Image 1: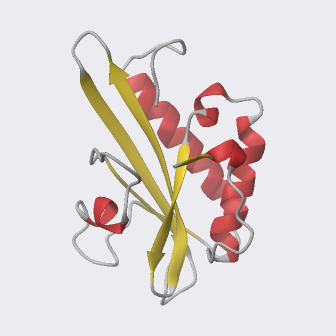
Image 2: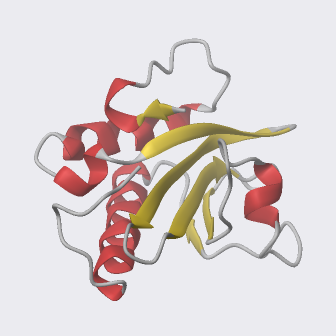
Length: 145
């Protein structure tokens, strides 16, 4: 369960596009408090190698937890970048099954980016996290884990 800002991608097996998205998100995190709370796990599905970026929110008064999981990987058939997300709550690092729980098949992705559009993909992932935070109306000083 590594934080986005301290994750070392060297030799982890993710494809170059997923690693480039990770690098863009790390650069954004220097000026983005929300992204500094994002954690990272590996997405490993044969030829589809990438990352699952996730953020958990804990509401102390109600003892309720929420989690947003966003997988970024290169599609095995067309080399475009896929973005898939789910709201499945996990006790430890999210796994592929966490993402697949809300997919119908391998073509059921939330967003596609052309091969090489890594910065555009990172901007999109950043927007998803911020929209999620805004939708659930929580403040910067509230608990994220």
